[in-house]
Image (tube, rainbow, N blue to C red; front, side):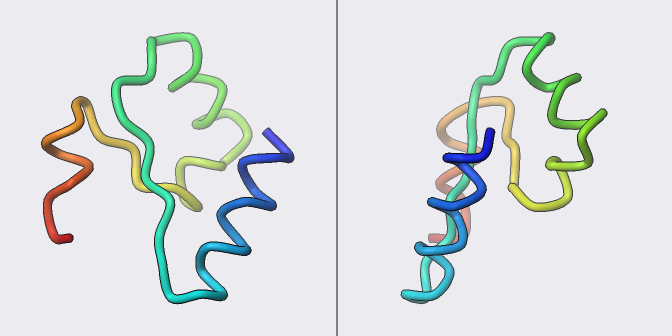
Amino acid sequence: LGVLVSLSKKIREQGGELRLASLNEDLRTLFELTKLDTLFQISDDLNGALEGF
């Protein structure tokens, strides 16, 4: 998780955004419990993650 947070920070500094897609139920719950779901856009599928790009 720490690697994802660091990577997301570096990407944002360059004007980008790291989005996650197709997480299984356990991973999604982990992101919710750690409040990382507020840091990342999490989509059900790849098409949802790509919307807005």
